[in-house]
Image (cartoon, rainbow, N blue to C red; front, side, top):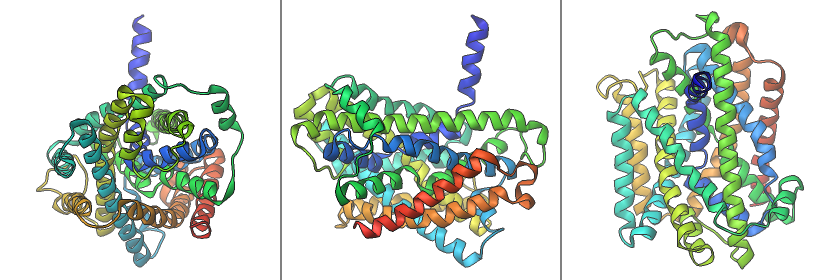
Length: 420
């Protein structure tokens, strides 16, 4: 009995950056995308998750590998292999896209809270954004990481919804294995699914969190400096990333199934935001399913907003050569925390502006889609360069899947323009 408990504890301890990154991928804007896929196409696009899982896992494992081997952030390593002007451009694009995403996510959190409470969407938005900002600034990394790990449980609300609605499991099984490409709108939705599942901010975040793990542990060192730590650390990263990405994809599937079983079956085919999905769910699936969906939006927003703001701060700080990390105090890394604050406050401003959130999210997805391709290509170059990675440069299946993901995202970026 003791051995089993120790084994469970050991597995739980190996879950960290990968689990948080995977869960943060299901942010409110992602929930809106998956809800729209289920509402418009029923179970027909579930097969996309079979394709995204290995590609997403490979890219995030490459990100983790770079951070753990070099002990440096992604942008810091990118400085070694690309012109400074291009790096600054890509990081600037990342900051803009992340800020738009933050604005959309905190707006969705405010809308969801208003649906439950009946008042104050803008005030809830400000409250949630400031709470997230204060946690990042004043709570040390090792404590904050535990908070984020617990927040991943909020996503289980979407798994619970599946069990309180009536699902056509035969149709769901067919949608899981038989591709549906019915017209340009289906292709555009598939592109949106890839864009929201494989996003640049996740690359920067997971690399940075591996560096934070080194800084937070006196015995841990970059694998290039302590190769004897490699077997245990590579195994941990693999388990952490594969579990985290599986969790992300299972929740995405649950959202698609819930929307297909309720909204699509009732002829509701247009969903603009995650809050719209929750609202539309209430008369079809009842108050309990509605409440679970709305609470999940708030929980995953608290998980995603720090990842969006933090990844932008890591990228800018690495590019500028500033000290960065959630383990540092505000006075020790002022530039890093200034970027987090700026991204969050601009997100609040977007919520109060006249910019339509759906149009903003679309252009954010377009920008992210195009930025992802060169970033992923440079990541693969870094991960295979002996001068940077030493004996730990990637090979085999991870190498093949990493380049495959880069090519798929390149095709998706082209498709965004073709099927707009």
